[in-house]
Image (cartoon, rainbow, N blue to C red; front, side, top):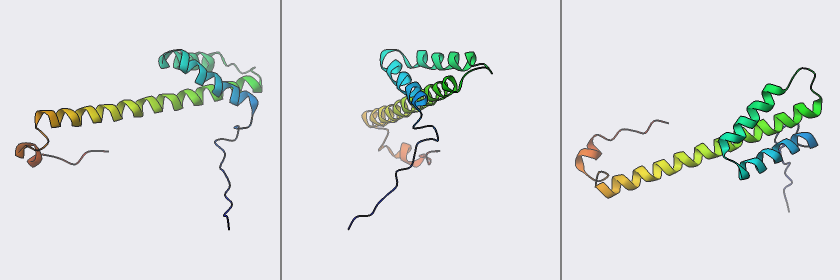
Length: 111
């Protein structure tokens, strides 16, 4: 017996070709350029989007900006994880992790 599940959609525009094209272009640009250049491209697209823009331009810009935000979030999460790993390794190497002074003054990590 199987249980059927319904896959949730990512957004209301996830099946629109212009939205998907914007997401794909942002992903391709991120593999070819620095992430800050992709963010600058997204900012430029948003600045140049006027009130007379077509629906296709608006959806393309929305897809590009959304994927850029996701890429930045992924990058920041990776950097934070690497920094935590490096700090733990450094504390172990220097003996601070098991020293009585370190464990006595250890505080709960803020989230």
